[in-house]
Length: 290
Length: 134
Ligand code: SF4
Ligand code: FES
Image 1 (cartoon, protein in one colour):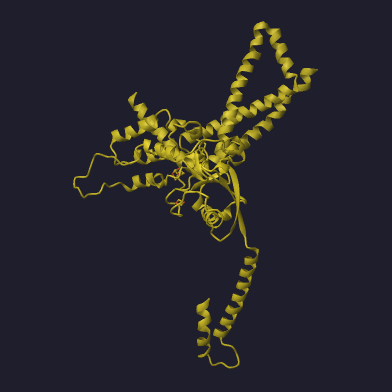
Image 2 (cartoon, protein in one colour):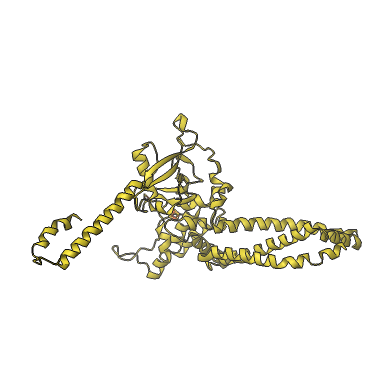
């Protein structure tokens, strides 16, 4: 805007038409009036100033009068492109510095800010306020112990993730020390989606089998196992070892295909599909022995 | 440190409004499964009236069929069985990894089909209702 204002006098000098306005002048005029209209519109929206009503779950076991869980309301000025995370950050910075939640990357990479927003597990930094009904209810992930406000205990989730040995462990190294361990394009495609997991635990929290059976590996861990079990570069014995882990009592067979995890995964990983495929692999493996 | 406490209705059936298709399919499947098991036992009970002789059996059946409630329950039983079968097929496909992307549509389809078949069956079930009485 400002750059055009400055250019105005310059452009008028070379145009020597005294009576009729040159096309350039007409264009400038139109721009001027357009701008006026725009500014007016902006003023109007300023007046109404949209706000978002947040209802945030609060709980703090260490403060006597906060031990009873409750909901706090915050009115946050709405901005275009505002995410749930932006809104709770605003609430914390402006109204209540004791409001506690995890966040880091703000771009759906670190997986630290999965909350229960309007009855669904969502990644706060990936959820647009404009897509939600108001008031926006923000709660900690269900089925996990709350430590404070929106912070839940993730230890159990991490334990399950580690239980499937989520690391590449082939013994076959390439001949040359500096050589890469190549993977075929097709194989890479196969495990592509499963490798996108950001450990946010939204899936685990949405699964009511996992809620009832604390030992169930859960969708994320099984998906991890899928990533490595399907990796061609690992030897057959390793794959078998992995299948043994996931087909144990609290492994894949607990899944009753409710699709809850697939529905909430912020990375759109087809979790149920992967679990089902591992079930089939497990059956195939066992049939071979008979 | 952290301690457990009751977070109220967040974590249970009180959230039913927020359940998705797959979840409903699971609940209905469980529910209809239990209904069918329950029916199995009443079915056996009714059939075993035959032990007291053919007349007792006929009396029981006629007595039951004379009740509008029983006729209506029969329609309900059909609905339950049909849904369980259709969703069972859906689950079979899910197990085979077929059409996982449209699992919600196949659930709705089985619901609608169940509805249609149930409604279509009503005349058959009520057929001769007055006749038995008379
Ligand atoms: S599978 Fe999806 S929902 Fe589950 S932890 Fe990974 S990214 Fe989160
Ligand atoms: S802040 Fe990192 S995923 Fe949301």
